[in-house]
Image (tube, rainbow, N blue to C red; front, top):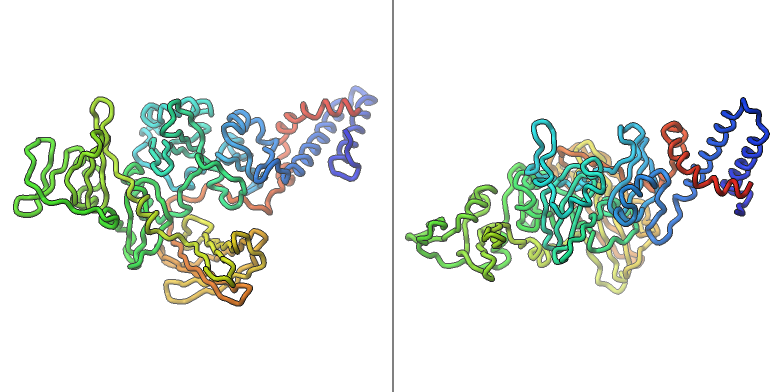
Length: 545
């Protein structure tokens, strides 16, 4: 093994040779000191080797799994289960982290279980009170909380100790055409049309690491949750359940009439900025052009409920739809029917109401499964315009801007990060200086010049706490001057809201990838990792000696 004498590793190997030679001639009463010296040298070898390993990638966006996590990573199935590592190791508040495609590996010297997975699922704002715990704090039986299809992989990973508690019931993601279930630390999915169920993990890690990681996640495992939510909408999801609302398809946005809206798979939520404690539904079927049916007399079928509208005529609603509606807010919330019951294909029944459409699928045993229809997907694809735009101008060379906020929502006492990415003809533009303007609720403005864009075309700025009223929407505008002297601006907004949950996991910070001070300060707890590596280094040492 040839190692350059000017490298850190080379110098350490020479020291190892020296220590081994000393060991041969040492007196018996100094064996303990010799062993300690060798251990210290091996410790430095591992530390130096790991420090060099941080920035080594085998392909774009893929990093070597840090030795600190190797055994834990392998015990969970390694790359076949968690995917490759997609970030260097980094330190945050005395803990060490590393992202994989499906999880965030954590080493916390202060925790009872030092090696574990971070609860990234909590950062998604997902929770369903329909999966409670008992009064003694014990989880409900697995048969009730966990889909049987994922039980094998769930147990292989280590059960609740590793996976965490369930955040949702088993769900069907119509847009992705897959079944899903979300837990605190990882999420599971399996394709809807597969004859043999193959369960895999959702890409929690790449979802959380976001633009800080450059790994291209396979489409089938990607998570399409928005990066921010408004607290009133989150509270309604918690109270009614994800199976009723579906997943959020967009971040909250300002509608044309100045209301705060958010599109979900099955419905559109709306609230007034002056009364954010009241959430109502937008008449989605009407916006998509669903025509109203004619009124009819009452049906004599005992399984039908008749709602009179005019002159003894009205709508007949099957009991299974009525029961579902009463469980999820009643007719005042879902809205009165606008169509009569229709049979779609012999297995499916459908009826539309003012704010949503319901469908009932005939399952085994002639049992009907009721669920809302995913009209939100269709509405989003037709009408929603995200905060990204381009300049159709030859001089602008197809200039494109994209804005983002650093956090799902911020409290009045919390900092916010605003970022912008600038592209020209699909390529990032460096050294562009954006300007930021924020409009505060009292009508005043904050103007701030952002740092020049980097080689990736990105620039970020941290906004100090605004100390505005809870529930305030903060519109902001980012402008750039093009190389041809044109000025181009893009507007967006974020919500100031005191939430009942906080962001669990740290951000990947490129300037915090050094952990050697942490290792030295936590020498006793880190020694087991050094001993594990001794087996790897010993054959090399004896060969070179």
